[in-house]
Amino acid sequence: MAIAAAATATMALAARPASNLLLTTRRARWVFTPFAVSSSFSSSSSKPSRALILYSKPGCCLCDGLKEKLQAAFLLSGPESLHDVDFQVRDITSNPEWESAYQFEIPVLARVLSDGTEETLPRLSPRLGVELVQKKISAALKQ
Image (cartoon, rainbow, N blue to C red):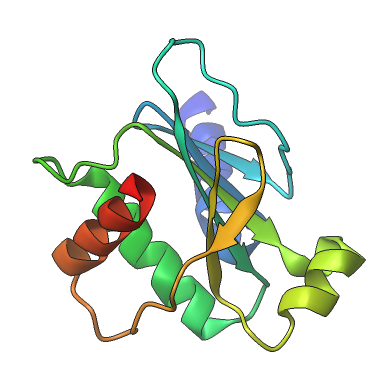
């Protein structure tokens, strides 16, 4: 009986649309939180953290495609590893300022600078492979 209840709960979670989830990472540990928005990118280590924000909205197929590629890029290792990057997905429909700024531009990637301001990164082509996305993001975060 308990196994059937657990299977039903797992199926209910799997049926939840991915666009309703916020995807964050801290040191390669993924956390899925429905509609949560965090404004801090603090890190417990003395090493400056790298932070990346994706402005998106539900139902945006370009946004969903970029999220999938970014998720895969974050899992890759090597010299261009993104394991130490704080990654946040922001739903522009939850904030009028974001919506007016990005409604015609999404998906928009921005890096968080050391002073807390954001710098918009150049748009990534949907045709780029995961390895190239990783290299481009890594290079942009090193600037």
